[in-house]
Length: 382
Ligand SMILES: NC(=O)CC[C@H](N)C(=O)O
Image 1: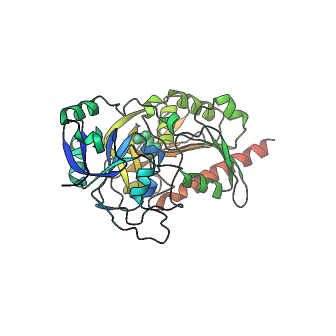
Image 2: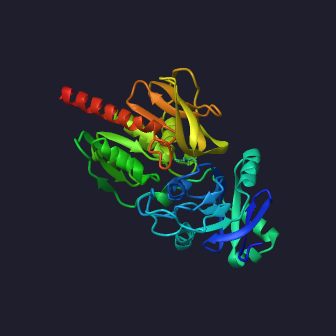
Image 3: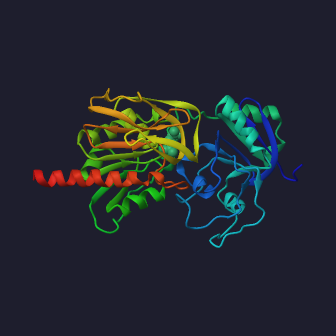
């Protein structure tokens, strides 16, 4: 066995032994599996993974090293990283370092030499679980002690993690090309590519901290509002739901991605619930109900909106008619919402597709069109 042992312990007592990878020590989080065969750097730096131990189903990880262009934020956010066979060589012209070195530098405790597909089958059958990785001196703790620590760690259900990942102060990205207006982006763990795509649609992008109040946000007079992806349980974000309801009452165009979709669902009056093992990967088939077209999409969510599929319904919170716009073809989970009487829509998956296929990039155009329509109408009324 490995010279530098490590162990992955699930809350049901299942243990997988392997070798230390990245930083040494102990870490806890919700064990989830991600099925992407590429894009590990984007996954690791996606703030939505805060609080999660990510198990990679692709067996060989790290062969392109890490570079300075692909990160989705300024740091690695996963709580822990589980891989089967880390690449011993880095082979890419853009690489500036190895993945192992970056994990170590960022203090991310990982484990390698694990049969990650076996772990995945366990999580698929039993549902996601709390887990811990123990390496270095921590590997010598008794199995009972390790299990006790895992069982005493925090559960994802009911956790609000927005404060951990959000920017402390606002900042702006200037619109590229012809400017059509401005968008206030609530940073709940936003990814860099999302900001780039919004700026590329001619929007001045004002990123604001998650602590902002409705008064402060509306005082900025944005032409539109965007709520980002992010970690944690949307059921524990009442303040952001109230903030969004204030935005919707103003009639401002709204677009939300992932956590933003869950918050739109709640603002419209629907509930959210925890999926057994979530969707994470870059090959999820989603149907756009309006066009009947299927997109292959990038996902990372463990919760979903509970809304009726296949019918137009009245928003229980009084925002007019609403429909589920997108549905996952694997398990019929709600993947998008569209309000019919106010300019608001959102998707549960990732049109910024980092990593992932670009099938759903049109959604940024749809948002731009909504902003154009709204600013044109505002001008006519003046
Ligand atoms: N990527 C995201 O925004 C994730 C949203 C939420 N934390 C979930 O797990 O469902």
